[in-house]
Image (cartoon, rainbow over the protein chains, first blue to last red):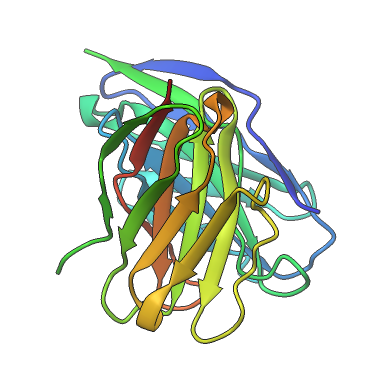
Length: 117
Length: 113
């Protein structure tokens, strides 16, 4: 079974500053994908960034980047130049590409991020 | 194009009544998922449909929960004899295939009184 752990229930950051959200996971699978999703107060889950486990290069999407450490099973999200619109709950998620859990996303408990003006 | 839609957006029901929640996935997406988001418990996988294959029902919490997907498109999640612990936000997602990004609907907030 897979588990995803987000150890920071809440984080806050000043507008324009940088913040890093932590995520660790546990799996016996060697091939998988990792995601960060954002859920603003509107409740709509939005994909922020995706990382394939076989890729060593960290994924980047505009102001969002990840630090993927496969050996340590760590997948942190860095948000640069934070904006007020980044205020949301952020979920780390894992999906194996094989095995009995193929195709099923496992989510962490979420981190509430508040960006202050 | 249109995203994933869900109806109703909010549902209040009395304990013991049956409810049906609807999900319209993005056109052409072969995979469809249902999740439950309870306060303080994160997102919990419920059921997963992939094409014409038998659904993966391993996440359904009890036999009061069932889901179907008609014509490979619209899906309905049915909860029979609702209990107060069923109160949650029910999220539907679809993807092009099992391993692609999942696109989520806005969810249905179910309140059982």
